[in-house]
Image (cartoon, rainbow, N blue to C red; front, side):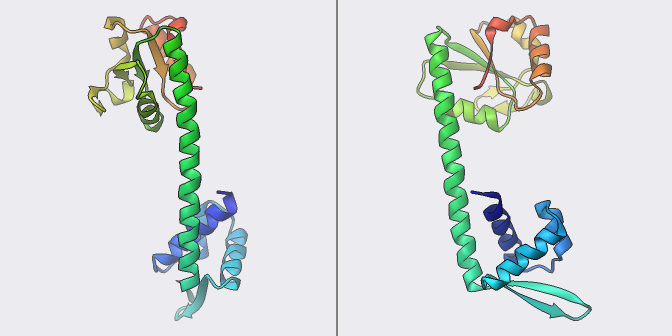
Length: 193
């Protein structure tokens, strides 16, 4: 889904809520300029997706039309299909990554980092001979991930594993530093790719 369609969908969703809103609110929510919001709204009105009515006190109300509701449904469907395609592509890449780890002889895996990437990696690992034996995340220690309690990095010193897979999105340097300070050599660290 392109950015224009995404912004249109967000505008239609906000209008569908039937709350009093302003172009400033649209601008802040979509993180776009007021001028761009104004042109989006003019385009929505011209296409018949919404109506603009004036209320007392110089206020404006935006009303979603039946055509706008249909367009919102179409764009939602497009968004879901687009998101699913991205998910499938990511899952396929991760499955190839885990197959490569198996080919290297890895069996016992630890994930470093929780969150969406960790969940996707865990789901993609299903069907392999790999076994997720622990999850380490200093900021989430004590929480649960799947059937495991999340541990601190010091736990890495006490475990028998083949590979630590970094499943954080973002600050890899800090993750590597923390993992290495727990005594893990670089040859046992892998990045999702």
